[in-house]
Length: 268
Image (cartoon, rainbow, N blue to C red; front, side, top):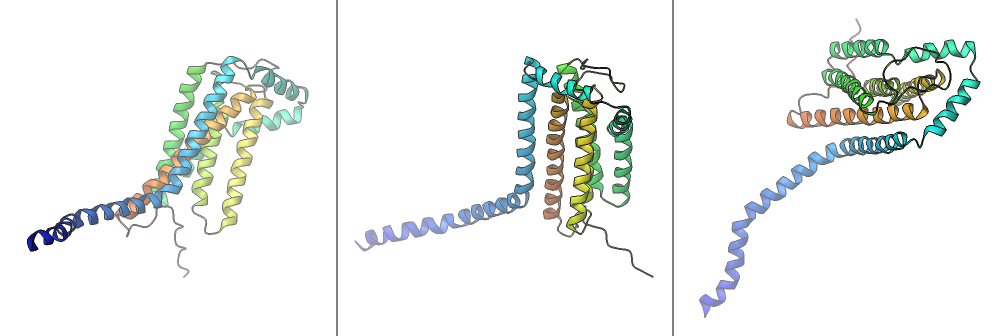
């Protein structure tokens, strides 16, 4: 009877002693995963949400464009713009739209990437090159796929080639200038220069997008589609950079963050 009475008490205790190391290991793994996700979650989730939302919006817009549902609105906007053109504004918009051409964009990217590399911001330089190259490739594929004719509402104010949807100027400007502004803002120690930089980038993107419509080479839906998918791609690249750097820091805590402001040189 004594042996039988002891069995119910000793059996659970024996199981607990046997499985405690396993449970401890599982709890440790869960804590480790939670810590990693806690560090990456905000940036990854934000990037994924923006990229996914932008892709969905682009898909919806592309479907409406291909079905002709936006044509009346597109023509109405361009007709209004064509009726309000002036020689002075024509010249100004030609200069503005040049900021989104391949030569200017690649020059900006080259200078920014060189500066980032020389100041040991290698991850940032790599991100900028990947974002730009990937964006150019994506835009080429989308143009070939949709093959939308250019608008013929009024005489163009500038030269244009390839198909119309989505706007390459709007897409490349959104990717490059938003990414450059994001990388530059990481180098500032104060908040106000960051906001100023982001505002300048947003203003440039908006003006380039407007210039494409004003000059008659793109419909509003082309410009909106280019900016939308460009923002999604840029956000994905930015989130990827944040994730890579946080993983690197956790693996090697002694390595400082790549984009931290460089120390000021010592004064003699």
